[in-house]
Length: 440
Ligand SMILES: [Mn+2]
Image (cartoon, rainbow, N blue to C red; front, side):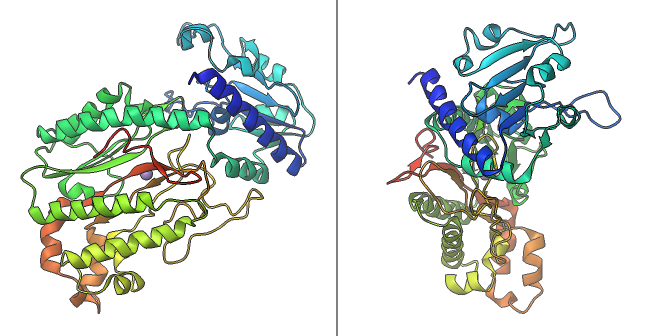
């Protein structure tokens, strides 16, 4: 389907939700700016720019300093910052988008040659909230800056993806799958972490900072660092964790694969196969009305069963989980919401009023405590790692005899395993967006 009708339907739906959010929080208008770039301290260089996520939720225009004015019953005003400039290239909307942008009809666009012009176009709307980091400008306009309750209300609604957003996430998955196939080939050819990263970015076809997030390419024992972002020149790995995604129209895919080379230890390969099996079971178990925390607990029981089967632990899955042994091997949450932000917002909200729903004490790193509902997209990413700092207390403690330390030490050379797919919750069977484009 064409993007234009998808986007216009998305915008209509989201404006209706914003109206409700404004009414519930006693506001009459909402101003969101795409934001100012972050300039490194004591330097004149900026970090790669990312627009305010709330701005991107309504408008896929890139670049800093644009402002949106949303008022119930009116077409939103887009004040587009487009100065004349000889330092940085400034293009017309048509030049950026290769023709009339599919989204432009949704807005009343005002072209602004200066920051002053942007904020003149915004004016001083009464009883208006502001979301963004251009707080001095917003204060001058007498806006209520980043109100917490309104922001929570908007964040809650962002968990439910429109057809347009689902399309963006699918397109991001198609690109992410291309990157993964290229990265895997580079790994199997004996490439270094840096070369594998470069193969991934080439497969996606973008600059590093345009990826969904800093790529994680971890060979061998480096896989035990969950967010290993260094790229080293060591190569010819026996195993690799590749956790990378692509971005399309601001929406991110988040995909992880653990690949083994033919030279890898057969016992570790069997563990990877076991994780692949239980990951697919967890993906298939995604359904509406299921609290995500319950699925996370299921993941622990499954990983614990695998630990017992493979001889790493000599206790039942139940005991392994209740005594907290499994958390040494799986210290992170089963997954998270996915959208404009890779770890998307609203995961710990109990409702649109902003009530916080903390993770249970035994699973402090759970990123979402919400109950699954149709149109949510979550990642399912169980892991199993050999992390020395988490195993040490058990090695030295009263439960040491439940662990096979010889086997653990031998397998530690391979770091760990993580397998991650992006799943759409529906009224019926879940849709595994990732496997549709990356079967293995
Ligand atoms: Mn993830």
